[in-house]
Length: 231
Length: 311
Image 1 (tube, one colour):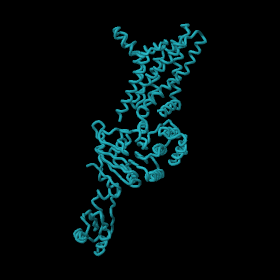
Image 2 (image 1 turned 30 degrees about the horizontal axis):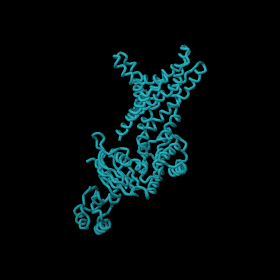
Image 3 (image 1 turned 180 degrees about the horizontal axis):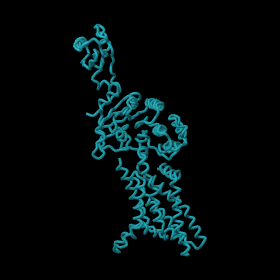
Image 4 (image 1 turned 180 degrees about the vertical axis):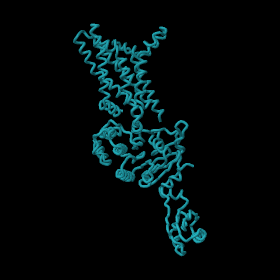
């Protein structure tokens, strides 16, 4: 598993994908955050974390789309599965590589809270919560991306489908605002954005953590079933 | 070493492999022959555990294949058809990754990679991306990959495709050399290759075994005997029949054609005996003029064609 993880993580930085995705991420988040930041005149990162679910829901599938699709397309999938590793090793190795990449992508954004802390009194609690939430969100989205990638040999299909699922998961309660209130509460609970915003307020509620972990688990288990079905 | 029983694989409604049973001993170099779509690759994929059989069992060294998948994978080296490797990795990085995955210890890893590079002639391309290699080099990296862990069972799907004649000769030499202690299963549709490298040949057609044996025994089991073609001048079919049918071992004489006084006939003999001397002696006694005299060898190619052609 560690070898698969290392190899996948390294491949990101050997090919241009990593640099493109990281640049886009920093550009988008940086622009949207700082363009509104001075209008509010508040030393918080709420603007940054508020947008993160939407940014991640189109960037994470771009990161994970190649993990399985490329192997299926080239045929190296056959080699991978005849090496002495289990399906679990393969799935976890790839998943963790995707997650580690998201982590690497978030590291430069630490410059934002540092900058803000010079400008005013920054409360570090929500910031820490936001980063924990971002990693949990990243885990959920990358497992969804991994699952979609294991279904097709076409990376573009994997990207678009993954993006559609992540987007709907983020915006499900906002898209269905016309439904009755009781139903909306339930849908809100399914939405990733709701849980992420809770954590990014600095409140680490076990329900929110459990939500992200169960989404990840379901998607990874789906990947496992998909792999067994291919045999 | 490997026992295969009633192996069957369906892709949906399509039956790719139909109840194949095989028993492969240690030290055998088994060539799997067959026309396109016969099920060669499917059989190999099931042997490696990549595909799960619809029916039937595979036992390798006392283990059923689904019982101890990791142990069995450790015993095997596998080169899939056309060597699908990671295209953006450098050759060295790739081999190093495979060595890690094959659990080769850090101290011996470098020596092992160097040995494989030497064996497969990769030294000049070690620092090129695999995607930029020619097909022949790509195939050689694939071979190095398959042999990295010094496997007891080596499974090669069309190992020499895309190589030039010198490389083919080298690869065959490697296969023969390591085949002395190892079990090798290779698929090919180049018949001369199977003849040159394998000591056992299994021909499959439409998912079934059409023939199984060493290259020599295959010839005997399927041939109707040796065929000798003779062209004679100054002879007619009746007198030829009268003269030659008296030789023991000749089963039939058939007329092929007669042109400008030249009679061409085909003599079918039992395959156990070489009757060319006898036939020549009796022709010599007459006043016929012998223009042509040759025995058709039943090469693997003939056997293959007669076994796998439609209907």
